[in-house]
Amino acid sequence: MELARNLKVESVSRLQPPAPICLQPQQTVTEAIDRMRLHRMGCVLVCAGETLVGIFTERDLIRRILAPRLSLQTPLHECMTVQPVSVQPSESVGTALRLMQEGGYRHLPIVTGFGKPVGILSAKRFARYLVEHFPDTIYCLPPDPDQYPRQREGA
Picture 1 (tube, one colour):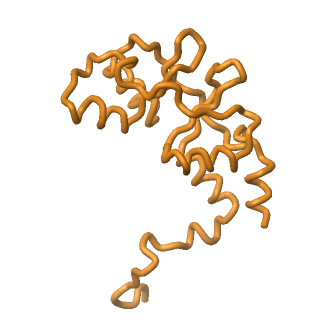
Picture 2 (tube, rainbow, N blue to C red):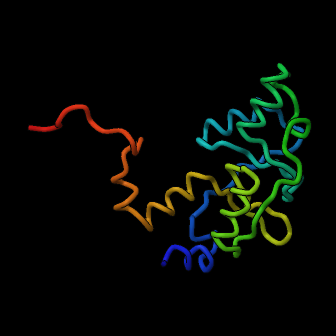
């Protein structure tokens, strides 16, 4: 099967990941939310200089800020996920997908060997990748496979 081979052979660069949004640890949750909304992304990377030290996601916002009713002026270093799992640009798509699945992550930073962020992978990117391999199958699936129309559609 071509997809199985591609998952092993193609690098994460093939997914054309967007450049990451990077903030400093002392910046606030409000600043992170503003950037995430502006760029329509579900996370920001937290960097000390040019080195990845954490990630702040929508889940972090809900679990670590909103649920305990903390201030939106909380610095990111107090609520980010420290030392997130990441991949290098040359790693395979399959490796990245496995890491995301095993960890339950929706976002995976792409970093150089020196820890500098160069991209961010999202579950949405993987969905697009799968659509490229199985367009006929995926585009023709109903939202609920057990759902059938009650009456005939069309003329």
